[in-house]
Image 1: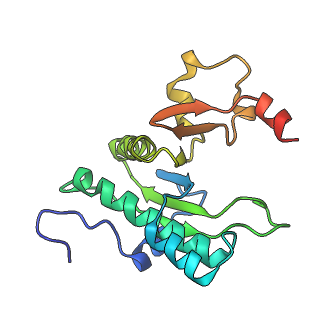
Image 2 (image 1 turned 90 degrees about the vertical axis):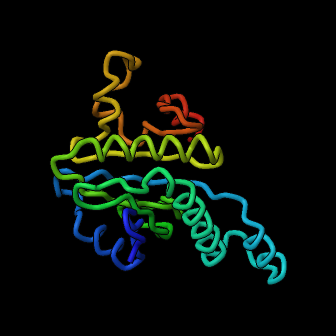
Length: 192
């Protein structure tokens, strides 16, 4: 149990249960992903000692777990005493998706789902926490969406470039360095 007056960040099993409960069609859920890893002395040392391949799934999972722990530790003072409507913020390591699947090519990352119910303040607190993480740890980038889609675009509609439409917005809105960034279509042409 968490110390009195503190909100537990979430145990691993309970977090996976919450993610399972919050399917893509469930309303009033914020979904978020964090990509990138933080340098970890322990991970780097074990990789050198075992001559492990840095692209090895186990090495990546270990680096992501270290990143998850650092993120949660960084946020702990901010969530202390915060009362969540339904589910607290949590992060889990998600393996890369294999080729030939619907989300083929998505690298391993951290992800979470928080049901916020009627309390949209929880959703905005999550946005703040993701901004804070990308500010504090510049190697990380994050995205957040809900059942309305890219809700940050809705809130910033009067300040968006004209080319950005709901049908072209998928995976274009990111938090990086504590700021919202929109990936321009030219980036697609450079990848091809």
